[in-house]
Length: 328
Image (cartoon, rainbow, N blue to C red; front, top):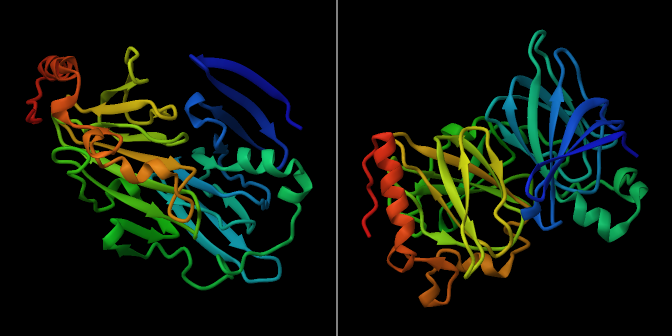
């Protein structure tokens, strides 16, 4: 199906570089071990003045624009088209099995985006490419060509700390809400797009701070939007693995591994998490990630963590001239 070249980019992590015949534009599949075969990511580049081929398929995807400016047109068979413009920082989702086409209107610069899909689950479940890629069923309950579908407007569901929208012009500027159950000074918001079962969320941590460690199911792809720091990952009772990150970094905590993100600098750190689960398909352990282990949850309180974790953080803050603001 694809002309494929594979190279290892880390322990258990692989990239697949292909020329995808459905789009005729260069993409790279990124298969990170932590996804647990529940989802898949790819990075796509649209050359200056180019466009993708019209496409539709029976799996969901979340698209985050990494660079460039362009536009996307979405439609169902026989319905009117809905077009919208995007830029670096935009987040959107083509509705399930709706036709869509991406355009790079810039004459000199390449546009690039990263997408998370639940294609692995769908491919493994049905094992029939025609059913997934040549199915003419229209989910009009999700999208019916209505005006303003991609206007960028949305609504806040305060009871769930969630922003519901079909298009977010720039997630880097989206206003966040208190997230103190996760960490001192933390803010964040859940994102629900295009009536998907997939979802996303944003979290932000002040200078000199870090959240409590927690664990959950597989597949949360974390894209660093701002800040420089590091994360620890570990299985219970086993040594920690450290990952250093900066804007543009991508990583996935493995299923049921504790993970904890640290901002030992004098700047804010913000990340976007793209996930194969959301609000209509709940992974049971997610409801407990804000509850401490002592209360039956999957989160480790600051006072219960390994003291070495905080000692390392203090040392990192000192190296970077930052003031540690976490009180243990």
